[in-house]
Picture 1 (spheres, rainbow over the protein chains, first blue to last red):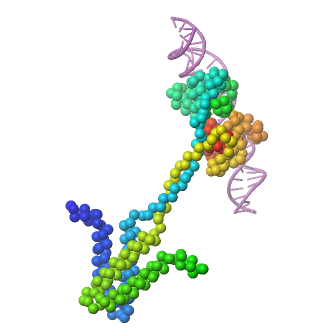
Picture 2 (cartoon, helix red, strand yellow):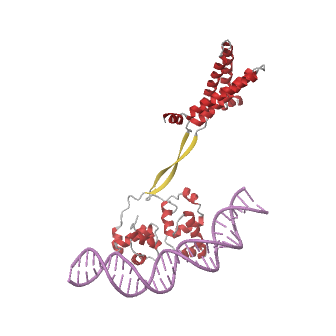
Length: 158
Length: 158
DNA sequence: CCTAAAATCATTCTAAAGTATGAGGAAAGA
DNA sequence: TCTTTCCTCATACTTTAGAATGATTTTAGG
């Protein structure tokens, strides 16, 4: 059990050892072949140098964790500072908007459709339509976009 | 001048070459010393193997380029609402809105209906519809109210 | 308790908005 | 000159918004 674990852990080292042993055998055999030539020694040394340099490179590439250079790129996110919004209660009471109507107005300005507002407030679409109609009458506008524009201008919504 | 630049660029390669040359001298010298022993060849080969493996490792560690990893960090930019309006040209070009589309967007935000915008710009209602459709696609929204909300948030319109 | 305002919902229409597609002309670049 | 983009317009269709009306149910206040 422990032997297997040992093998598992030192797999790379054992592989390296085996390869080295095999290479030595190969070199021993090559030695016999090259020894008959005059400059065989230089060739032999050169081959060894090249092979083991390559082995070192291969080993390093295999065993070292890849270097990671982290480049931080800043992406700008634009956020409107709406901290200083003050509801214009004078205008609100002048127009006589109810709390529910103001709520609907707010959601309209956020870009929600009538059915989405209905879902969000857990009421029916018809109810929202009634609210919007009353809203437009009270604000004296014809469309939701006008209502939004005026509500922002009058500080009824941020 | 060009020689200096060449040296500068191939510093690592030249260093490697010099080291290799020095090592060969060393090995030649060692050869003379070890040749008198019986198993000198094996020791010699082992030394070469170890040295060049080390050289390969060192070279790899020195020369490998780090992998570049890009990390996007969102930087929050707060926009003052009370100040003068500054068109966010970066966002505008990012979305790829044409001048006519921006014009239509502006009028939409002012509460005008499509036909009113058409009259104002002396074009047909269908043209405005086309503009709005393209606008919504570019801004990735579904309704004009969403387009207005996003345009204000991104400072495309006041 | 009673009432007025507010909130809820429905139905029926009409108007407006939005989608999809094709196409022609003008201007700007490559 | 050729290509691309923008602006223009049209037709046909679907979806959503809005108007008008009526009705029921809460809810707060006199």
